[in-house]
Image 1: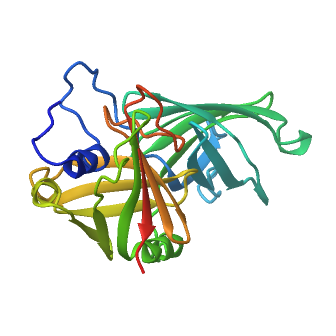
Image 2: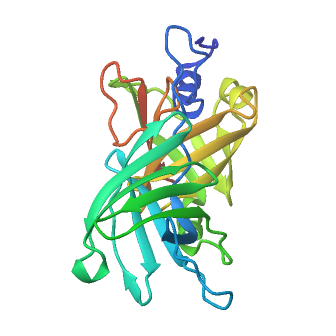
Length: 279
């Protein structure tokens, strides 16, 4: 990693907005798989009984919502089994390369098969798995749900980003980079695009960027793609919290591991940025 010559505000912006490393002295970490959101597909018995040509398919519809919360992935399933019913399976997820491996156990009651064990594997385009109980064994296969309507929650959140924000605090490795009256910089949001207002060194590195919000996670996620400046096409993964006129963003500088809490301790390589809306 190298630091360009420039003012402290340029260093501060680098800390928050690059969120990537060339890997000197640091092992490169895998980016978190993008598996959160809504899924849809089917589930059914592993070895269905032979059926007549006019019989209905043994597979049934299934929907699933995946969230990343408290450092783990959780999947909530909704399905049908002859009659509509809803059940919840909190499948603990762990990252394995570019996918997330899930497992969980749930008791659906004697009427619906008793205690089930579930395992699954989710990647960006497919979530497949297997379930078994004392009475039933089967599989499920899901794909990301195509939203017919815009994400109203996400759009409302993005609308709240609009306008000009000034840096009120920037903590990296537990140290305040804007202490002792050091000059901050501004973020100006216009739709899903934003620009930086600061000294020329800052603009040269990070002139413009696009944002994508994921409001289905806890904490909420923020993905940034730099669209102008020397760091063109750099990608940033972070978390954010928006409360009234304060916007908090947190990201790990070394590697692509997304933080799970708003904190920057000594030696953590995590940057914590607090913005205040300007009138």
